[in-house]
Length: 112
Length: 112
Image (cartoon, rainbow over all chains, first blue to last red; front, side, top):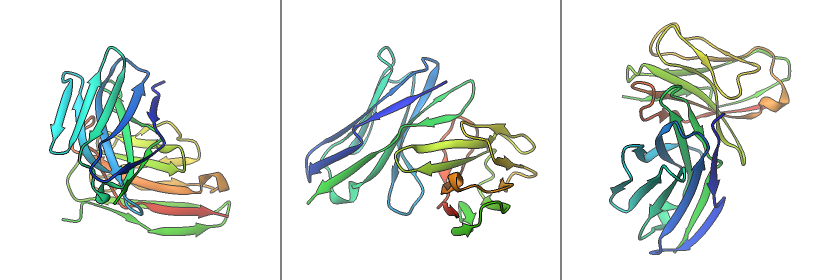
């Protein structure tokens, strides 16, 4: 079945620096790749997503890149701020099943 | 508009007892999902429903059942709770399968 691996599990950066989180997926039929941010005590919230017909997508300080050949995708956060501190999850879904398979999460800490 | 609501917020349950977690959405979304979140394991799909009247099994369906009698409600039932079902449970919905999923605030369940 589909498997999604996410690295690193924890990431600490200085405010203003960039943060990169990487995910790999196993099923080449996957075609939808969302990223979620989860703050303490809350449900996950979508921050950006990308589909397999696109290689890169940006939204202000956040960008996602997709390499279908290598089956990996990454989240890039630039000019990090303390409020970016949270747990981030990647996920992948196949068009055939529409099920989202999540990575294990990355705890991002932005130091003021 | 409330989005997705879940009840209860938290619950302590004795092993062997029956429990139903409630989930309601007011966005008229066709698809709904139940996930459990355990430390270090991310979110795992328990059951899903692509449209009212249909349900399907996710990654970890054993010990759980769901029903989808109408568009808005998607209750999750534990017929006989066991300690390994201690977790945080999230309900989610999306307009159609393979689209952005919106998550509820979660139910923290402890089975003793």
